[in-house]
Length: 278
Figure 1 (cartoon, rainbow, N blue to C red):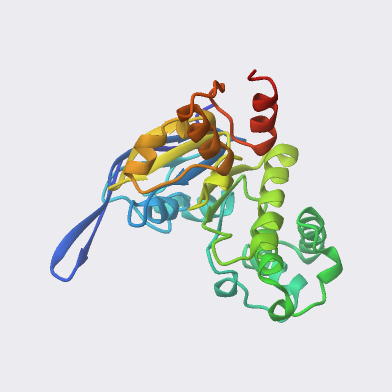
Figure 2: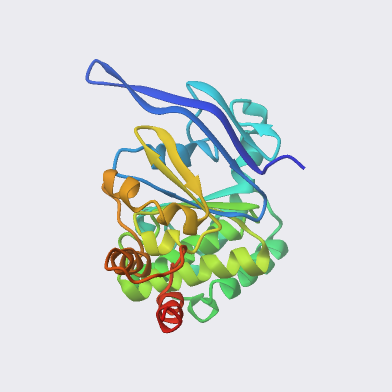
């Protein structure tokens, strides 16, 4: 089977104050079906612009974006691409439009012309998946930030996408809300096989992915497993990026002469390595 997502030489430019801004410069990215990929990089690196190409909210200036074998620049595929790739944005308040939670989750399937009985099944299923069944009759404005974001995810899931693209979905949440959202995403990927592309500024969140792609200046400049990417501490610091806490501590301890294996990403892994290091 072809990759679920493939960009080839993706370029995107737009005019601003009489200038042409090249936001993406020849991006080649492949995401396999069922994969969890995190995109990280400094502000202005092109992450959000790339995300918006993955369900044809933006169309390339040059190059190609293929979604499950469909070219995003072909208008005949637009509706199906947007059904298969759900988008969740940074601020859930910008996505919530209905007066109750269940109406909110039903909004997408209704726009797709799904029969009412099927919509009810999808709403029930999506709310159960994100752990929000007990809130179905609540007004969205009464929910916490983390709950609102889970409802936004449920709304995307009710359209039965094959992939979720999330643009910094936890950046406006407190620690508990971030944990709720990330636990939901990891579970959806592992148990349902949902393909996930996560744009994040959090190195801890990125470490949960199968693969991490680092962007700078509209290009992917580093790519690999979380263990591989976060071993490149100096390269990441050169981009103004940090490391997950455990990786940062392991890097410092190695600098002090303590022998530790590469690829330590969690506190548990670090603790085990310290216990066996001598």
